[in-house]
Length: 105
Image 1 (tube, rainbow, N blue to C red):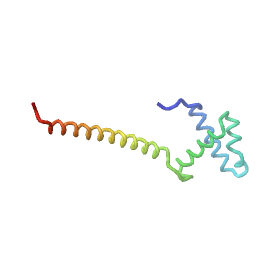
Image 2: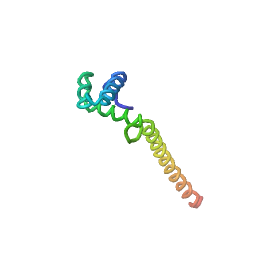
Image 3: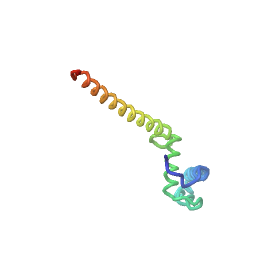
């Protein structure tokens, strides 16, 4: 279960949008994240991470998009579960093979 979110989604979206717009304007680009974070009552590093994620998702910055990261995590969970099931099946097969090799009474 994921940890509860510290900031509501609407605040997160609004602050991210404001920071991205402010960074596009050369006159207000310097210190935009810190200034907007203070105005919105958000930690500057949290806002910096949201902006980075939004830029990656928009294709403005290189990196793995959110949808790709979710898909990758789901595939990794599936691989772990399949490997676990495969190990259980191998153990069961070796157990039953050993039972067949034992002489019956």
